[in-house]
Amino acid sequence: MIGKTLNGIIAEGAVVRGLIVAARAGGFDPNRWNRFERIAPEERERRTMQRIRRLVGNAVSRSSHHRSRLGIGPSDVGDLRTFDDFRRLPFLAKSELRRGGPEVLALMQPRLARTATTSGSTGVPVCVVHDLSYWSASIARRSMLFARHGVRFGSREARFWGRDDTERRSVQDVVGNRRFFGIGTGTDEALSSSLERLRGFVPDYAYGYPSVLLRFAEHARREGGALPAVGAVIRTAEGVTPEQERVLRETFDAPLVNEYGCSEVEIIAFDCEDGACHVDTDHIHLEVVESETGALEAVVTDLDNATMPILRYRLGDDIRLSEGKCTCGRTSPVIASVEGRSADRLLQMPDGSRRHSVVFSRIFARLDIEGFGVTRFRVVQTAPERLEIFVEGLRGDFDAFDRRLREAVEEEVSADFEVRVQRGPLPTNAGGKHRYFVPLESNHQEMP
Ligand SMILES: [Zn+2]
Image 1 (spheres, rainbow, N blue to C red):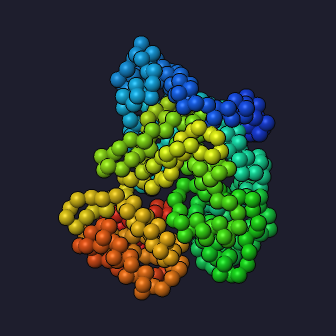
Image 2: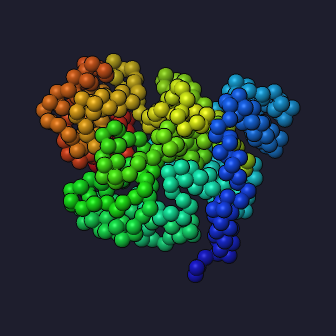
């Protein structure tokens, strides 16, 4: 505690209170929430629009900046009756959030708040203010979503992250019973020592980036040792291929649960007991809109952030919704797939046109069905007519795989690319997160 400001101590005390409130779900009625997940879509639209009107009304009556950016005044708010009405309001772009930040977009600066920052593809952080009630509600919501998979508040969490927790642990880490496990320098020794620490911790569940979880899984397999038994593996932030999913399920010997979210708005969607990734409609209003590149892009409105309105925020994720009803009985929409950040995922075609790199994800998914599974891959466009494809953990014969992959690229992408396929470790990626495609413009900084 030495060297801490008084403010910091007050803030941490308030966080503990928030966590206790959240843990007991005081002021956050799980029955109301459970009912909301199962109401008719028309009723959901009516209730969601009520909350959106309140958010928009608050924003335009308190801030001239929001009035001018939304192009409406307090007297127009009553006209927002349906989702279609709401769709007429402008998007909030990442660049606008970056430029304006909390100084311009927040309606107030609460004393006890935290700023969620994220560095997207550009590496420039975006800041969003979450006040204390937002934060404790988000902890309560998170623990209720996790409870779908038998994870209780306070269960021991092994977090597979970009860092270890050898540094000072926060109050939230201590109360949340959470330990961090990173790959360190990435050497076998570093992984072995993290793995030993993990076995000593005896976690109830695992949570983290698939790329880090996969490194642990692969290392444990090579060492011949088992990973500690966990009740569930919750993956976040990155997509997985069918082969990676198989490796994670098999090595951890536990159900693999998908969380979809971002630090700006927290959890957007979460797997149900039947494995469908439902939008958390009590917290997020999700729209799917067609972007300039023809991709279907996720646009989110945070229904809980009254401090800094996040309305129609363009995430840059290419998203697909499922048709039909889920067997679990929830009526909220289900996300079928999320494909990376569309903004930095464009392939430059030899004829000068552009194409979304998601095509490679589909090619690898098909090759997987044909029996050529890989645990990780990365496609690097090194020249306008050249692609370098790196693969790790190939199942099957390399020469046959090499031939099939070239054929698939020729058929599905273009016959004008010179393709080189290489087995072995993927080149390091400066962004930290695992990206399977490195576009032409950025690979000079990304390649070692
Ligand atoms: Zn479901």
